[in-house]
Amino acid sequence: MTVEQIATSRSDVAGGQAAPPTTSKTPAIELKGISKSFGPVKANQDVDLKVLPGTIHGIIGENGAGKSTLMSILYGFYEADSGDIFICGKKQDIRSSKDAISAGIGMVHQHFMLVETFTVLENVMLGAEGGSLLNKSSTLARNELLRLSQEYSLAVDPDALIGELPVGLQQRVEILKALYRGAEILILDEPTGVLTPQETEQLFKILDILRSRGVSIILITHKLQEIMAITDRVSVMRAGTMVSERETKDTSKNELAELMVGRKVLLEVTKDEATPQETLLEAKEISYRDEDGILRLDNVSLTLRAGEIVGIAGVSGNGQTELLAALSGICALHQGSITIGDREITPDSPSSAKEIREFGVAHVPEDRHRMGMVTAFDAKEVAIMGYHEDSAYNGAFLMNEKAVENHCRQLMQEYDVRPEDPNLKSANFSGGNQQKLVLAREMDRAPKILLVGQPTRGVDIGAIEFIHKNLIKMRDAGSAILLVSVELEEVLSLSDRIIVMFEGRIVGEVTAKDADACQLGLLMGNAGAEEKRNSSNNTIMTGELSE
Image 1 (cartoon, rainbow, N blue to C red):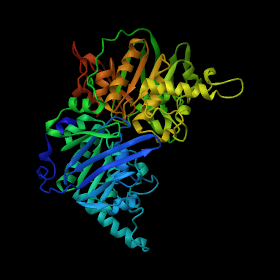
Image 2: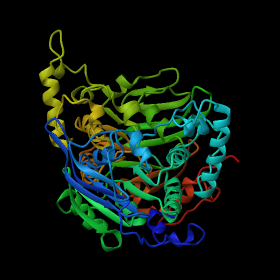
Image 3: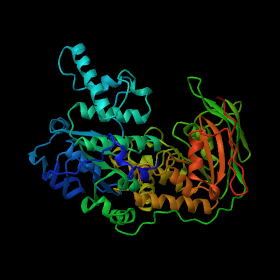
Image 4: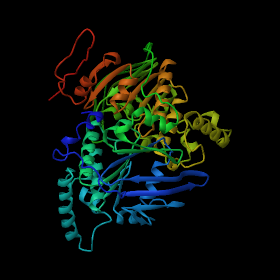
């Protein structure tokens, strides 16, 4: 089931009952005249918002529009400079997250706030142990956790370690934490940014159940198809102000996109047919085992040609991350070879990320926080990471700080990174602007080969349009691009050739013009992989998979 289909299947959720109509006239949340500034930056300016009880209310806007700041004020991370907060008609003075929790507000952050070495139960109890007798508290918490799991279809093993759970289940734990603390209002910040399509579908079923039980939900997302699929109302923010509000049933993706950016936005990728040229990179039968000896890449072969975008389709965790790491020199091969130009990289003749960059290979990692940047660094330092030894940034003895700052400022202007402040800590940028900064660093050099993972994760619709156009522009200028994305629509729109991965192996390949989303989806889940589909117009080659 696609996200769009979820919108037509709500009656199948919560025991066959659609969400009941809202009868209360008192808003679950009402914000009046909220303003917040950080130095000269006005993050929120006189913002009003009403969220009705038992509804899902979407908030959308470009990166830096003020959405997360507004929700951080509601949840007590920040104090507003001016304005009032009303919960169920009663004015609340929220100065901390403790105040917000006491008011019945819970928040699931874009980057989960969980202790990976703790169990599910320990994470749910953390900060709400309920007394000095821990064993008794643990028993009560376990019983309540099981009750909540059953009532809201949030099944998860209380004794499982968080670090061993997939992200979809970790997100369930975050929701359970909020419900355990009595949340009747739930804020979700970019909840599907790290989820597979299947996990997204399951999350929306859970949100439908929560809504049917009277929970009021605020959903912050950049994905307009999700807004159309699951929300009842949607508010649009731009440049720190609230510019519009719509009943979801009365609007469209195109109208919302235009309201977000203040101009018409091209939602579909337009491109000419590719004209692939010489092979710039070739991988032959490469394999890789992680530190635990688990085979992550299994006999993978592929070619990247100038003037072509090769997309990798697959459910997250099926070897895409390791493939990017192997091709970029981050991890060493255990078998096979990678040829770039005249250089052949093998287990006996390994390479490094630095050497790979010198061959003209740029890499945008899937996880910007862990691999793409150091959040404690200034933006200008992040803008040259990996390229900091270039003569353009260095004098005879010391780094040329002015040159570094000017370079960053130029990137910020060209890639619309907000705020345009090279000296601001990268941790203080929104997730989407952090992503644009990493993309700017790698794409601006017009590399021969671009390895890009999840290029539009957490990025707003206007920036997505910009990124897609630039990827096509790089392709047309002769770059070879390997694109990894969990968004099948993005892979289908951008790619000239599509490879499907499952459990570290390539199980299918098809040209984009012959691609069929249904067939690709089957291959992504390894359904029917034993069959070979061949026809004159559409050939998908599937590998022989071990049972």
